[in-house]
Length: 262
Length: 307
Image: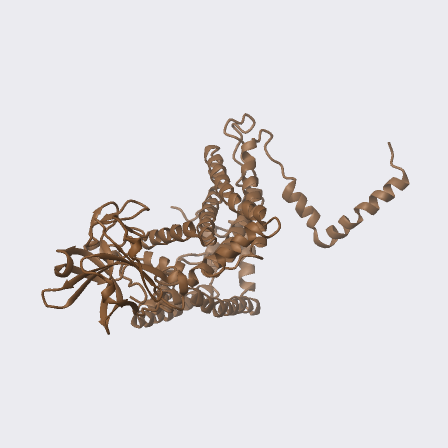
């Protein structure tokens, strides 16, 4: 059925803002490239665990930013500010609960995602570097857990952190350096809380975000693997590692032996 | 060190100078913390290897007579190589200079911003800044009956407040053989991983005394136990069970105007004997879980700041 001139006009008017943005930024095309990628037909629900982990991280980021508006990283008021968030601020109990339980969820999802990657063999060529970035994300994610655990500044937080820091201190040679850096002195003191807060909400999340970008870039560049039982992927030549330009950029970088043998 | 035999000037020669340069930088950074001579040595290494590196880079970027390369490849050089060489020759004029200058200046500006911030973030932790080893007045020695342990809770540093609250188990041993007053002052932190050890025995809370912000509660322990991982110690602080690697830390003391005053915190290898006659192998303060004697102590060369 042919569109009436009026319909076409309305459609054009509705799409105008999108086209305006696209013409100036290319963002619409970029989003399409980012979101509407081809994936293997026999993809599995397990392969949504990475996106779930990302969602958990975003939840942590958003709730953390909001909590930072009320939290006071000072030994004399940290505990009271947490009590205030939990008991007095409207919906504070909910946001703090999301951040606290979401932290465990984030770690659990990272492990499940890692297990899926391992069991599907998705860490193999050409995705080795993405596995390494993922492991670094796991380590920094746990560092978030460690630094965040001190912030409620109650007995559990304090002694768990004492033990955690002293475990670091028993590493040969570098151990005492690490412990002294973490607690800003020979014992947990007033500087420790502020330092952990800064690490927890600025330094480590910055690193995590940068690594997430790298992780996703590699996923988009290399594509999604089929499950190991895939029939369509069986016997297909490995072509993922030959993106456009592959053979070109190595030209001139490696020594060519033709002609100089013998 | 540059790969002189490489007929392709586009391929960066493998050079070892950057590694020496990096070692120099590392030496400077470690030296700033540990000792100035090491820092100077590092600076010298950095400059020497830096200059060698620059000389090498300059050499490998100098216009190379590329004719032999063509001969080696044959009569028809690959088109990509020709393009690469033209490109290469082109970058060695104004454009090449500007590229290098931009990268160099950017690096210098980046370092000028990053290094002080990094130093500010990291160095104070290693210099012992803010670690006050002030003496703490625990009140008249008459509060410490002879032969009885007293749980003594005090504020280690008035400026830090409650976060510096510490506990020591103090026993008045009476006079030593040399007719000098003797106290056993055991720090409450477990030398496994720093949890608070508890006295295993009845506390006499009805006899609790106060002196300023010092709380004194007599106790009759058969030993000390740690609630976290099961470390156990006898009344001299020697390990009897569990994961600790040495004996409990202690405090030095002095007696000023009849008051017991806590001095330096120190670590203990083992204690032989007991009470006033105990022979204590004393070491500078170390982190919990760290060996102070035996060969393992060489794994921990750095002193705790302020110790």
